Length: 69
Image (cartoon, rainbow, N blue to C red; front, side, top):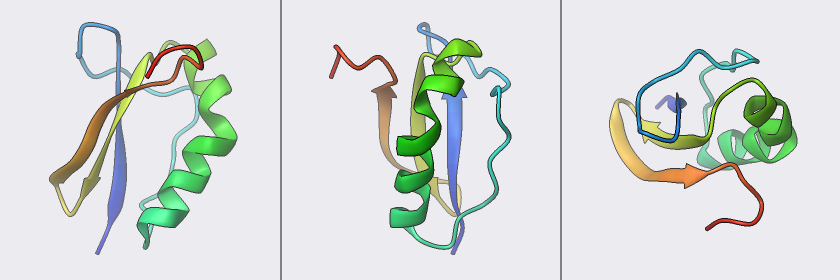
């Protein structure tokens, strides 16, 4: 299984992330990574993220802005 993030602008279009993540082997690893680097990703132009497992959307879009849900 591979867990991956899609990085999007506020309109939902895919953008290149400021940091290029790996494919994660667990959901927890993927979520820990986003928790550590969300500020860098936001500063680099990503506004929201979508988590997928083996190409199937698990959840999102999820805002990277702390004051939004």
